[in-house]
Length: 175
Picture 1 (tube, helix red, strand yellow):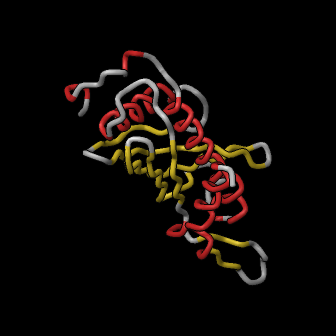
Picture 2: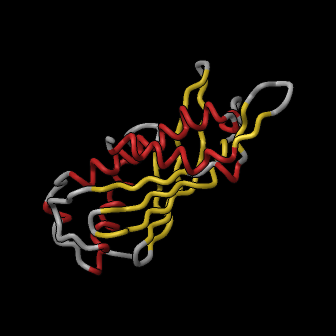
């Protein structure tokens, strides 16, 4: 099984039990508490000594650098020994309109080559399509895929040698 397929399977399982069918309208909805995703990202990092602190530092560096690269972003909130908290926004397109969905992300270092990416508290931002992500079709086929695209971008960044400037992190560089 390919890694992306495995990630999608994990993401799908985390919310599969929470779907409701409204009688009369035939639309399948998902409860807000069941909108969750979990992905495990595995990587090799050629540009630094593999430590948990360095992994978090590189993840934070990615968050800082990726903010201008599209509609899907993660913004740093806080960090401690093995966890990093972030706020995310993804954009999906439905019928030539945009739906922006915010979420909370927690990135936990499992080891120096594996992180756990957890996304929770998905909420539609104000706009003409607010409430659309409550549809299981929109959440699983569009919102979830955009979050997985963010995970892919992060994983690619962690796998890349982004330069010697991060090769020798020091504790003073960490917050």
